[in-house]
Length: 151
Image 1 (cartoon, rainbow, N blue to C red):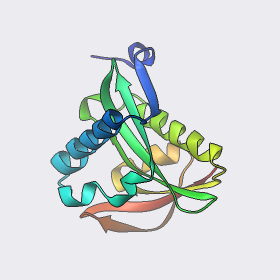
Image 2 (cartoon, rainbow, N blue to C red):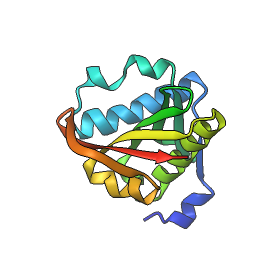
Image 3 (tube, one colour):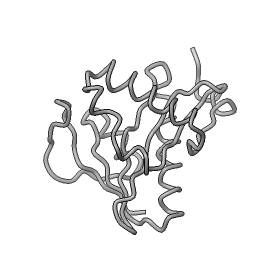
Image 4 (cartoon, rainbow, N blue to C red):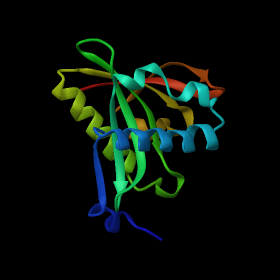
């Protein structure tokens, strides 16, 4: 069994710049959202993927996690499509991806982040400084809640 300390020196979290990195992000999302959670494959990859910032996490060059940042206005952005392959969950990799995307937002002078959290990971986002707003809603038949954070 892996532990968090063994992974620290093996984990790379970076902005996905190459085409291969982006393909890996889409493959991770397909495995997590389409195959695991039953999201319609036609809804998973969208036109926002062409203009947003993608993050990719790798262990020993193996892509294992992703997330994206969508700039909504000069000072506001949305984080979404956060996905970690099942084997690698609970190792703080999601927090590393979130931190990278938040730092990317700050470098773009973005001051507010919103996201639509699946309800079962609301505590994860709250632990990273996000606050829930409003009522639970369904997206792809999965309960979500709107969350926000000021940077």
